[in-house]
Amino acid sequence: MLRECQDHGYFRGEACPTCASEGKFLMNESELDQVGRIMAGVLRHFPERFGLEMDRHGFVELQSLVQAIRDRRKNLHWLRSHHIRAIADTDPKGRYAIEEGVIRATYGHSLELDLDLPTDQVPDTLFYPAPPTEVEQILEAGLKPSDRKMVHLSRSWDDARLAGAYRGIDFQLLEIHSDNAVEEGVQILRAGTTVFLTDFIPPEFIVLCKDQPSEEEKRPPKDAEEEPTADRESDAASEGSDTEADEPQSEPSE
Image (cartoon, rainbow, N blue to C red; front, side, top):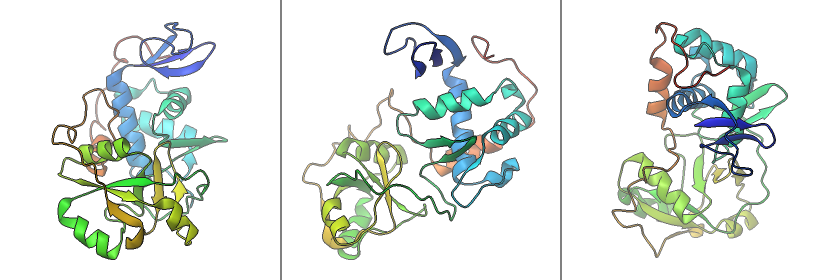
C-alpha cells in the first residue's frame, strides 16, 4: 500500500516507518502494481504506445505520462502526478528518476539511449545470475548484453539471486571483480539502488561464485519486491485500454 506521511513523505506499508502514523492513503497494492508495470513498460520499452516523446536520455514529461495513463486506463482516471512521484520516491531499487518535471527509468531499457549515469560508488564486487548453459561461454568470452541494451549487474549476492529467481529459469551466480575491471578501463554505471550497468565485462574479471543458491533459494519470497520483465510490462501496457471508468479501489485516491 502506498501512503503519505505529512511529516516524513511517501512510504509503502500500513504505517510511516519513521513516526508510525497511518498517513494519507494514495494507492492500494493492486493499483500500485498496475501503475508500476505501465510505468516500467512505457519508460523502458515503448513510449510511442502511449503517444509520448522521449528524449535521448530517456526522459518524458511527467504530466504527459500521467495524462497518457489516464486516457488509456479509464479505471485510473484519478491518477495525478504526485502518485507517480510517490511510486518513484519509494521504489526500493531506485527504478525511476524525476528531475524538473520529467521522469525516466534508470535501467532495464531495450531502447538505444544515452543514460548519462554516474560512475562513482561502484562496489568492488558485483554479481550476475547466468543460465547454467551460458556460464562456460561467459567465463571464456566475457559478459555481453542479451535481451537488454546493457548488462545488468547486482550489488549483492542476494540481489542477484532475486533477479535470477524472477526470471523463472535455472541460474548460477557469477562474481564480477568490478574494482579490477574499472581499473582496466571498463565503464560501470550506477543505475538504481542495487543495479549497475555496463556494455561488457571481460572474462578475466568473472568467476563462478563458490556459494550457489539452493533450489529453495532460487524461488522468490512472496513478500519480495518483484522486478517486472519486458513481457509483463508489455502485457500491462496492452491490457485494459478500453475499460470503463471505475472508482479507485479501497480508499479514495484524491
